[in-house]
Length: 64
Length: 381
Image 1 (cartoon, helix red, strand yellow):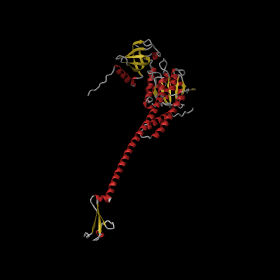
Image 2 (tube, chains in turn yellow, brown):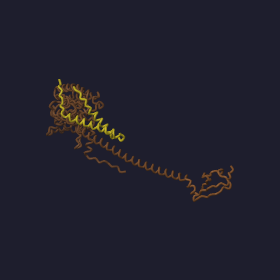
Image 3 (cartoon, each protein chain N blue to C red):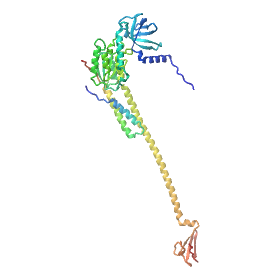
Image 4 (cartoon, one colour):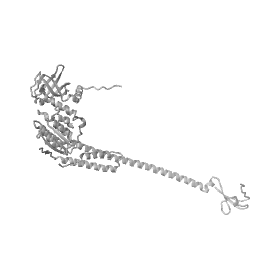
């Protein structure tokens, strides 16, 4: 049994957090640009995960 | 004030009644005893009739999927016990019993047993809403217990892969009907408990004339109630409720429905990504706008401050010039005063500086007067 430590949901949460931080009026531009980059990276990463997962095949478990 | 009154359509009313009645658990999966009357057998194999007793009468329908399981041929006058749910036929505004099982009085023991079991499990709290756990729609792994080569497995796999391909899928095949089905299902279930699954789907296709009794098996139902992971049942369809459906965390009416409950749709995620990018971009553009507005404002302020300073300095210079002018002795002469000088050109600012017979010069604005001192007197203090 292998564990696949995909933190998809956490990554999505982080993305939402980034969006709401950037949308705050008080956050300086420089910080915003840094966060924007992080957000974009998350989107690229998760989109890639979805794309690559398309080839997955189900595992049939033998029941004794 | 005029009160706007809502005007409902006939359909609104019937749909509302249907919604209200279909929420009432006391009208679901109930046993009813009565006499068959107005019996009609439809072309598609559905049975339409009424059940009556000495006081009243209720319409009843048994669809062919259930009717093919009947162990006798019903006819008017038969005393029967049915397992049924109340159903509203909104098109006609009528309600009727939707019959799953029907037995002649005297042979209804199985149904009575099932009803007893349901009551017992319910009393133990196994159906309680508080036991229901939320579904993680971003699962790492999903297990599926169902029959091999079935429409159910095909629908579940297709839909999970299409919606959320990230989830690993483990399939535990088992027969879902017939003598050995309850045991096989239990074994498959126990095996599934060893895997790190987020969600377990237990399902079979509905709508055919098959037997659902395996999903009412007490051992299986109790085991499922204690499942480590969230269970979604997809047994039968809308009208076929089994005990598994009651203990599952969530019930789907079709295998496709179960796959949909178990996963988020990637199209929603991808749409969400678009929105996130849009939001981030517009927030940054807004910040830039705010900053350029700020710069304009600050430069205006700076300009104002500078011109104030210049005005002040100009004023200062004017004042200084005027005070300087006031100190120039010539300007004193201009105002009508005079200055007296001694013979050696010293300003006479003390009477003791001159003596009688000395020559002094008085300077005025337009010339000088030369005179001889006659006498000088000091003012007495």
